[in-house]
Length: 286
Image (cartoon, rainbow, N blue to C red):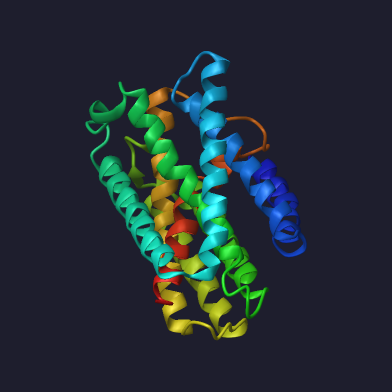
């Protein structure tokens, strides 16, 4: 299992770097859209839709929402005051959703009584989970693009690598040293040792980034604080997907990536970290 995870990681890292830095914005947006549509299909599995036509409709709705989000995101580069107000509201919704998700995690399994019998509510949770990731990825990729088209790409690669480092280090440390369960009812395999070890290693990586790869658009100390918040958000994202999967009685959302499972299993931490990090970056600019 660990070997497969490592092999997949070594394959995914150069592919991710190439997609972020080499593809024009349209092709990049298409790739991210495909990732989100596959995630939406897998969310349909978590929602326990037994008929493929139901999952197809989930993907169609998500596809339309992604197209609308893409148009709005590109319009936002003009930073007209009305759009700025809109994204303030959107950012607030994202933050409130992950606060709610954290509350659902802490109160699970009792919280499942609130949502497990409602497909509409679970679908709405899927929108709040996947769509902001799509928006955050596109927005961060194009951040400060008019003045310097590389800065946003560096930020996007940085937060992705930071989250993956946190995930991998927490997994390895938890496997080797873990004894005390983090949240047994949600994810029995996660431990406090893995949580603390992953946090310390990723915080060290964040410090190295701001120390040796300075991007002076935002104060490095602010970026460091944002990074810690994003790491915490990534853990909430991971636990949120674990909670939904556990309630559905499935281990993985798919089997596309060896050692990881489905696309949603691979980006479960990023769906929270990327939009939260993007929100913080944008809010610091206005």
